[in-house]
Image 1 (cartoon, rainbow, N blue to C red):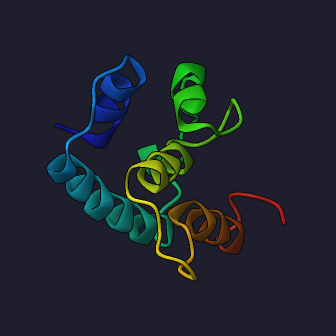
Image 2: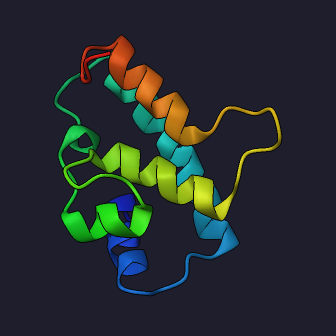
Length: 100
């Protein structure tokens, strides 16, 4: 199952298991690496507004931003650890997908 489908199900009210969250975390790491080499990645596409709302991010946000936000909700970072959302935003700015 791909991460976008899991986020669609989550937005409709289906819970994400701990195992699924772990797989999504691995997927997020892979997506972060992929945006460093190609701007053609699906994670850079804009997510539907209902996904953005469930992730608690602004409408019109990228899929990768929604994924990171949902993971931060499901598996909050430890005290002093950078959130996945902040990491994604930093990478998007660094690689020219967002203006600083």
